[in-house]
Length: 201
Length: 338
Image (tube, chains in turn red, orange):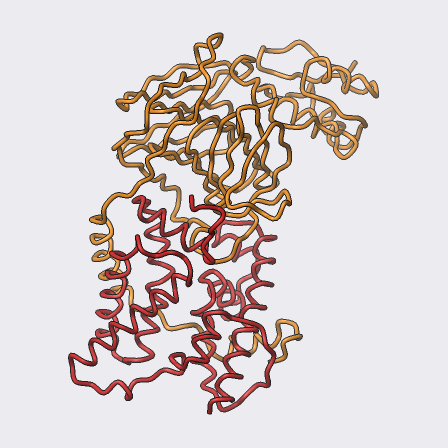
């Protein structure tokens, strides 16, 4: 275990990485299930090419795996992987002669990136100029994986709390608490992104 | 979106946006298989644990004795596969409380240190001192007891990793699938009480109730308890397995578990609750002379705090004069009318 006097900010991510480095197969599967879909969407939002996105994400995760021992938990694992993915995309563009300015996602904006990576709480007015669907999906992807899944299961698939608990393999009480935290985190993150986009539009 | 509204705003927003697009299953499978290969080729940085100083207990030859050795196991740890479930909290960024310290004696340490409450978060590692014991509650039907000099990590609400020492898991009537993993094996319960001990190069698993499955490398072994006898699996340093049986009521074997929990407070429970608890503590099977008597025990509450000793059981039963203990089989707690 890490030195308790110098705990990483993202201790859960660090713990998952340690388990993967210890050849824990379930940790690998949990890692893949949590990050492959989100990175794929991250790449697709920039490239709009499924085959290319698959290649980019595979390369991203390969490099991420090989660099796992260097992950310290100062940034979230998702943020860390997204940065690798950005680098991969940039590298592909340079190689293919594509101008980078052509593909810019609003979550590359420094203000938005900061919001997504810290999910701090500031209230803001709702703006109807935003690409709502993309913003919602982006917010869900940047939340902890189980937050995003719980919110989708509840509000899109219409599952009950008990059904969600069964899927996660935990009690309904834990899911109720989880949903409360997920809603709060989603709301904060979404509002902040809207605010940033309004300020910078 | 109003930051102070209920969930209606989020519900509408998500319903309007629809689900996030998912990569195709073919793409998923391709990337997964290729990444698995990469991961499997990573250098194995598995923890090499030094053994805690487990004292040799000269008067109990059934206990595992310590050797001044360092873990050098190269055997792969298998993973039990009951269904396809994911480790709950490990894959998240949210420190969810997954257990509560219900009882402790002697000293212990928790890493990372918590907020001083009795709640334990996923990823917490607990280490008991050489005088320490504790009882953790995972859910309404599952508890875990840790003996002296035991180090265990709560990886999730359904997985406990035992680094060294001894733990006892008691789970009854619930739907949880708690698993105990060690460097060498994964032990999954099927409604049961069992003990796992890790010391140096040896592993011992004893079943007191129900059935367990032990997954080690490519092999799987079932062990169970029935008719008052529980199977004990012992693995030596070379991975060779031996099996024996121990009475579920064997005091010498199981007494430490009774030192790792508080007395039972009947004031907040029924007679049935107490008797069921006492029976489980003693490795006994609870039986009533008839269904009416059992229903009576389920409906009546008592008073006071009792242990699970014979004297306390008798005292609790006779307290209100409705119940008595009758001679039964050695592994039974048979309740009848006075």
